[in-house]
Length: 273
Length: 212
Image (cartoon, rainbow over all chains, first blue to last red; front, side):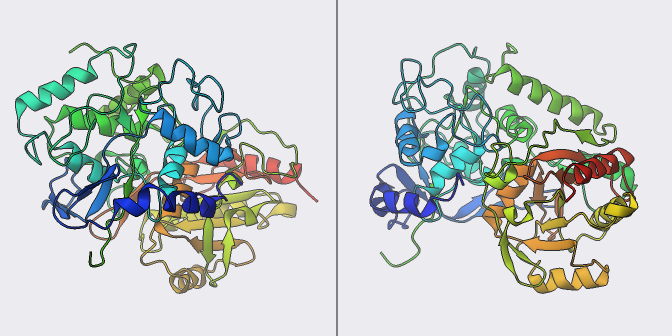
């Protein structure tokens, strides 16, 4: 019931941002209306598959330059009443969903328009992204991690200890600090706020660490309850990324937290420009 | 580093739980947990019903349906993939033994829905072949598939984790889930390969509560 107005969302959005965003598949960075294209490329994820030693190839996609804000999410809720606080199904969002807003359709003082939206479930975030246009969705972990590896001048700043330390500093900040607005310094792709503002949902949050291993080895009864074989983390010193994985893999899709928001990706146009 | 994580208390404790479970590596087998059950029949989809989400599926005979087609009777639901040589046959076995462990009047009457993780390989033909090979009576067994996006959503709804590995296998949570007639999750068990007595009791109770 909640999700049956998809064609409506598609219509609403297709007249908006989306028509402007794609079309520029060309090189690494092409800017337009809130999304930038990230060209296909190889990336060595910290989350190596158990047998993968080679970098993963990541197809091209276009990512929002900043996380979705309260203002943007409010517009979405107004167009899609089923996602209003109090109307959303309990299997799609928990009881804290959007509870920092004054009313289901009004932000109030505790939710500034340009702050990133938080207290949103995975289902709600996914629904917002689907409404961004055909093929809209949350980024995969691999897409998110690849963009998050960049600093202002390098696409892969991960070996830089100073950069790592800077990110870790944020993790140790108390949660009582008021969230900043979106719009921090852009990285080399032109994407902002990958670190230092909020945690972000990814499309495959429930694929990061799988607690039960279903492969055919070992004692079956033990096997089912052992997770040791399911993960292999390549870069154990990259605590900042490991903490993201730990958090995301501990979440259920209905969960909301005061620091968890999202951004979206859309497909990059493949046709001739 | 100061230990205040940038998450809510609940989130932080879950992270901690995760870290602990990594350290321990193995946790005690989970047995059936009864979720709070209300057995009031509703005409519209109740707020805690998984039928709130429209999930398009195709079964082993190529018939298209949506998840809420299961509405009206309690049902057992799980996720699997046909290429799984080891754990998935044990899931089938657990379902079969759950059915046969029920009291005679409801034995082999609880609908079963198994949804594949493998959207690339598990076509209706492959699912049909598996049903034939394992002698799964299609009056109660539905083997189904969806597209990639909706498979991920269904897993999220059922709190099932899965990850495709490079060789075409999947790591996944193995769990049997009991839905009441309105699509509320009222029980789950991680016991596979055999029937979990506590889970069988829950199934029997649900069937009794909704008997015609």
